Length: 208
Image (cartoon, rainbow, N blue to C red):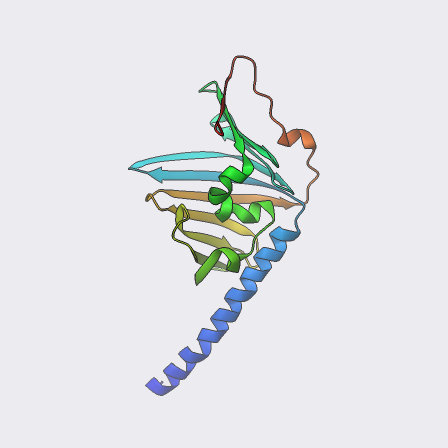
């Protein structure tokens, strides 16, 4: 095949890939922004300063702003939001910390799809995509360098389900989530998103 023909084919693929990327971004936004509730299993891996920790559990979400990260490893650990107050609890520490949801907004931005308020072009200014088998990997770069993360990568299935999410922090840290068995719009009760510290647990108000 001649060089000229190869260049023409390459030029034709650029808008095609851009169209595929835009379609995938819109599909992801539509899926998660229209969901009323989500239930999904997760594996969470955090790396920083040469240390690596892996945790797992089940994530429950309900609009607006309600979420429950219920850990099976470490057993009993919880991260719960009722839409205004966030509780972080680890029974091993016998300590529960509470804060306002708006105070954690910057760190939650890469996970905005979880709360059904995702708009890629509001938060990110540059996107790079590549095929990963039948899935598409999308790396998004934020518009502002004042945020605590430098890039966010999504692995998206053909039906716009996010299978993996990776967040690179300004401090060099790396947080990765692998999601499995996602259920859209299951029935989730109010009780899931409320937390009362057990007796004898130290309560710390992060807002004070």
